[in-house]
Image (tube, rainbow, N blue to C red; front, side, top):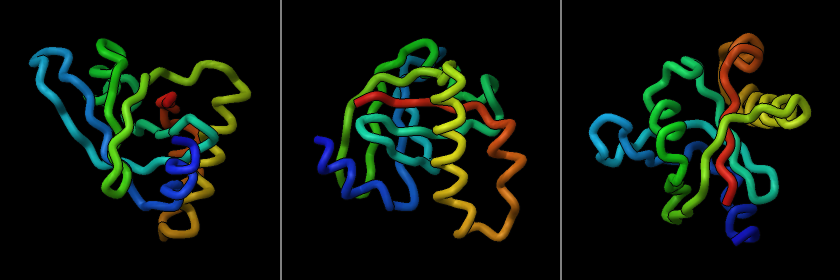
Length: 117
């Protein structure tokens, strides 16, 4: 799987499917991501208030689609300082050259979330 993930790391978006914590129904969002080994990182601009974050806190088993490949994993909030710094750096550095807005503030305040495959 790691070779497959590595090949897909440059894709623009992934599609994260969580299970709705209220409805129990699958919910899919399109979101920016960055890869590091067997871990995918995302940043939640709305922090713990984001619906998808609430969903994965309730049911951490998620599906991620990148290009036409589906992967199952376990989502979690990034809590260790070193990994927090890594997640923010990876996501911001991937998208800053592509986006006309300055992502530095977003990169500092958004909540880092990881999916381990």
